[in-house]
Image 1: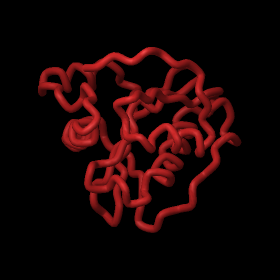
Image 2: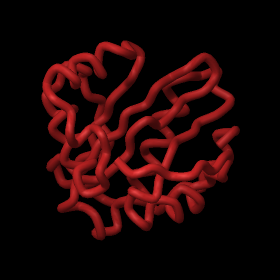
Image 3: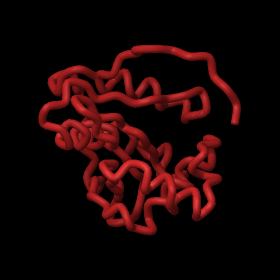
Image 4: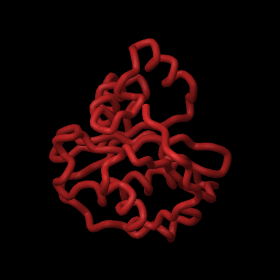
Length: 155
């Protein structure tokens, strides 16, 4: 997505919020691990030492917790770069998948990404065949387009 105006926002979902998280919050490894487990994400297998190293590797990385009716429902991690922001992690906890939250959750995540860097000219993310089957269609509906496709590797 190369312009804020390309975001095609989903209809709001009452009770779904995106709240900033302090990077020292124990919710980060907990929620990221649980979000990634069904999809084989590396974050679901990190040791405490690996979490500390990953968190320390990029002090600009910003985290936000998706909550639904005050319960943790997912997480967003954004990496601001010079003139772009990568949505490094976006996902819902398994108990919240299939409840119609993903489209608005992604809308909130994309808005947050653009807010993190006023000079950004691009917001982007990676997806893979390991992600939920509705992930890529959701990304396209929100306004993302494919930049590059690479052959996949299994963990």
